[in-house]
Length: 293
Image 1: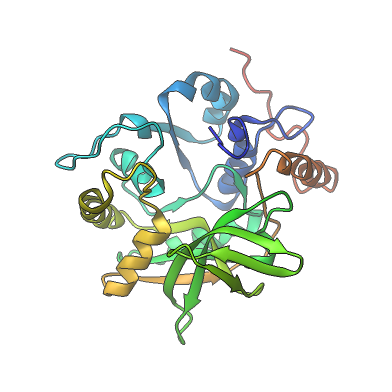
Image 2: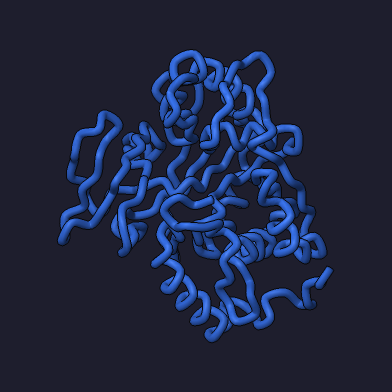
């Protein structure tokens, strides 16, 4: 459930045929060469979700993992309504993943070329399983016109690799000046040309061992904090600082839109409609009608 969106934003229809955003993400991934998708969902939403995406199984292997049912062995996390964050969500899917992976948000449109970039990067990682990747977008291009957003702000080393990533909240274009709150809750001004993480991560399965270790530490320090989240940008940032892993930041320019706020849907529909009209996407999206049952 999207608290700022006011509903399950991933299930909002965006095309005249009723296609939802996730279908476009999967379409782009298949076109680039991915052959399997794992949806990480919460059990109360699975029935509605399956009805909308069941046709995808005709085109790609589909698996489901349930974040709200995942209990990490040997780690005590108290029950709460709010999910524990993207790192915890990825761990919920560990048993389904044995290959290099791209990890994305279900409420962000990343552009078709993003997936081709991902496939090219992942195909080269067999010899260096602790070297990861992340697509970086220019901050100015990934803001919402309808409210604040959270963004991981990236710093690069001289060799172009990612040196740090710091999650900023309440990122907003304040009459031409981009302001945000940093990890300490202090208001800061950000450059519009800085690269931001949109949670398009490229990992090998070795990342799961780091996730387990980091979650154990997180639970000890933050387990009783009702708002604390185990987030991928924070996890990767910590591993970079300790030198345990390396990561490339792959600068990326393509059409992006997000659905953080209810008002974002109108512009998303407009972009999708235009891309059907110009042939970026076929109409209907899939070569055969989705099943009705």
